[in-house]
Structures are given as structure tokens and as C-alpha cells.
Length: 121
Image (cartoon, helix red, strand yellow):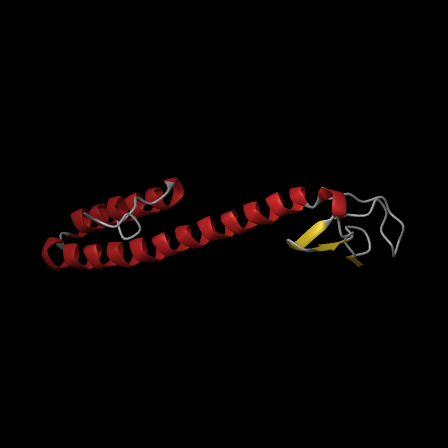
């Protein structure tokens, strides 16, 4: 049986479209130039390199999205820990309005001061 993590996945929409465009443009260039035999090998190499780069970019974007989702869920969990007013500038803040730099660190959206979170028991 194959390991699902090691299986090659299809590229997401935008990245798959870029890969398809490379093939279509490459085949058009080969057709107009008549450079079929060595040219197809060059096109396969370019396609392989770009597929690896695009897969790496897609995985990086998926990881960033997962990290942001984790931060947002932890921010929702600690919504009661954010004070109602910024201790520095006095502006009204909430868990939805502060800028979360980590699951346990928040900044005031107005003065950018660190907001001490209330410890809940």
C-alpha cells in the first residue's frame, strides 16, 4: 500500500492552470519552430521543474493557511481574555479587533502597543 503523504497530489487550480499554460505555449513554440525532437525534451524538463516549484509553493500556502486558522481559533478561544480597553491608548478593543501576532500575544490595532491578556481561571 502507498503512503498517502508520499503520494503525488494534483496541483490546485491556479498552479494547475500555470502548468497547463506552460505545456500549451511550449507545444505551440515547438510547432512553429519545427524543433520537435530535442525541443520536447527541453519542454519536459521545464515542465518538471515548474511542477516541483509550484507544488512547493502550494504546500507553503497550505501551511500558512493552516497556521492562520489555528491562530484564529485560539484567538476565539481566548476572546474573554482580551481587556475591553487598551491600557495604553484607552481605545475600545476586542478579540476580533486586536492584531494577533501569536495565539497568546495581541497588539492594539490603533497604537500597536502590546495588550496584556487577562488570565482566566
